[in-house]
Image (cartoon, rainbow, N blue to C red; front, top):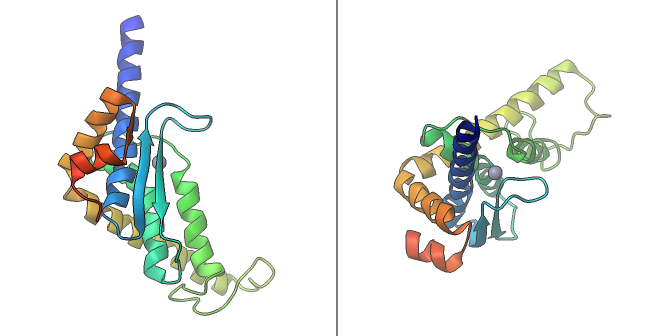
Length: 183
Ligand SMILES: [Zn+2]
């Protein structure tokens, strides 16, 4: 039993390393991010690991928001690409929140269009279904973006994850060494 437990722990740690590496590698190669300051697989209060990145402050274009959503999905996508079982995490909450905001607050849903929608103004099932489809589209678009970026960077994900297994916490300099200069 003890050995099994140890194996489970090692598996969780590796999955966390791959997950955080996914966030870090995605942000590193996205020009919506200025830098990635720190990546850690030391457990925090609500997480198994964390990636600290600096986003560019502008979020005026639909593509910026989609990119932001993709950065949240990147951890899960990395787990998928490396054939690991996906772990439950808060990223999907954050991603869905941003996609909902894009449609209901920013007027950037393709079907709903330029209008502000809150619970009081959703007067019809028809509008509700447009909102749902727009949110789903935004999520799918972001998922495809994350997958497109990370599918060709599997070895980079592995390298960052291995470095995390070795050091637990890594910084911008380590990422530069592993991935080259920030895009
Ligand atoms: Zn995550």
